[in-house]
Image (cartoon, rainbow, N blue to C red; front, side):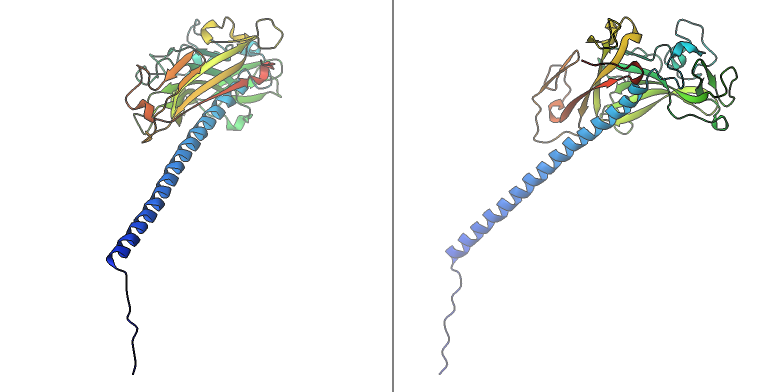
Length: 326
């Protein structure tokens, strides 16, 4: 006679215990997943801040290092055609958008700036865009790549230079009066400044530059975004007060008596994430240059403490002035 073993399943208590254990295991797995996602978001935010800061510094560094280089000559006094704001408007200056009278061709001042004010609020840096109490940095130089006569463009300002002289001219016609072994270099004049908005988002600040360009017919000054997320730019200038080609002190631009004594620029950028970070509260006071900023301060905007930030600095030497920095 065949006998069958009685089969037994889980009773109610055992089933409930198993379910509770399963819930705890799933909850633990979800917690680990959530924490991993949060850590990933934080890492991505930090990486993006560092990437934006690095890109912005590289952009500025390129022009600071080249400032006061004029092709085959290192002396702007040897180059004809330069004019400053006190002189009548030159026929060479930008026809549209120039920041100041003869601003584009004032090559005797290779580096200048403003400290916590907008010097061009009625011209190339609109008051409605400029971030209050940020600095403006202005740089001038000849670009390093020579331009053949056949490649000269209409409406572009160039410097034709030899070792002993040079001249500013507008393409496409190459001027005479410079040695036959001279070279043509495109003239760069640029102002870096901070806007309270970006091209795509009104509530995201950005680093911008207003620079000498062309509309295809005439020289013009145009503005373009460099990178988003930059909410402050501060500059201090390393100056040589003794004539020994070494930096003796760092000062704001309003304390610079002679721009020719500037050997280096010390740049600070305060970079902010584009979006608020839920669960994050910033409790940091950033002290740099002549600034002290706290996102929890009385002048801070709503939700300012919810943005992750990064403060970076770099001291950049002007290659044509060979400084021994502090």
